Image (cartoon, rainbow, N blue to C red; front, top):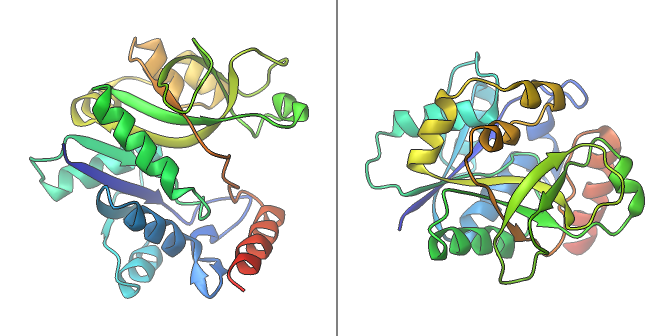
Length: 244
């Protein structure tokens, strides 16, 4: 089976303007994500963006990028447009990798892809163990509750996704990486946004509300997403320290 990784990226983040182009170790965040996707070695990698600055940054660093519409409501719509523009007929799986997680674990990318293939799954994502109980009340940390406990070799079904919850059994820190069969992605983008999705601001609820199963693989650790200046400074210190 053939996998294509598409990384949606845009400059419009209100909490941290220009986020994809911020530098860590003299390399932009989007270039770090691209390199990790490449190093996973599961298929071709493409950045989908509405911004020429990101397009130029990726291509100048030897990556591949495509310009998309500025009217997309979600990253999934953006990756679908990029996929259609590529006119590829031999792709079985499309992985949506977030452009603001430069420390994503390469083994987790590989693991998700392998589980999608081995289980012939239609849609898959990742969840990590929650170490801090305060995270259950933190609405910026999305939780996924699964039908059974996640083990290294399991690929349990998601029951729901939540922003705030009490301490739940079989609840994990959701990591925003998705892998779709091409047919599922095509079906998903044709669906209307659901009430659940709009209220929670969680796109994945549209899939569950329309009876699309989402399988969840256990991640080695939650990556540090870059949403605020504080996140960026913290991650910059960690990544630059590791490379000394």
